[in-house]
Image (cartoon, rainbow, N blue to C red):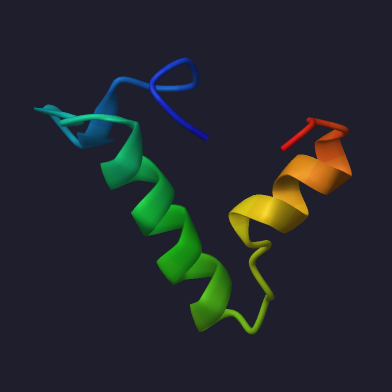
Length: 50
């Protein structure tokens, strides 16, 4: 999720940055009962060294 996927936050409204889009995705995920990975968990899942 981020500006590489879409530059719009809403209809006709440009996103201010990736953080705004990620925060929305985290909120939506939590609203539907999904767990969101922490930064460290995401790095481990993606095989990125700390």
